[in-house]
Image 1: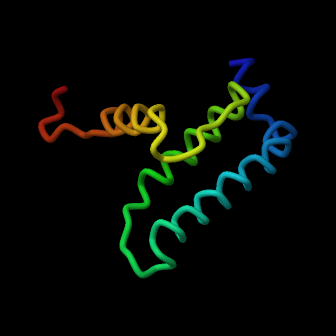
Image 2: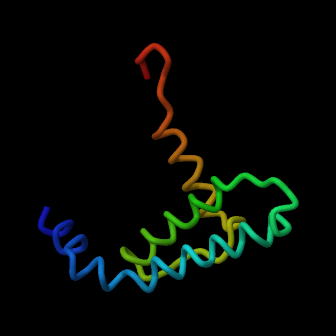
Length: 92
């Protein structure tokens, strides 16, 4: 609890803003490029997932992925989908 409070305090989050903004700009740039400036439909989910992953990696480990094709991005997306899956009958 103390560790979470340390990393999520207002002062800490303010310090993360340049990195968070970098990730959002990178995501928008990739969406624009891969979508041929809006001419080609693309799935934004892997890009949003990579942005989230990079925010976590940067804050916790000081590193980030360089592309949605990075193996860690695929691993993250697979497990996040499993975590978010809602079973129809409520049984796992």
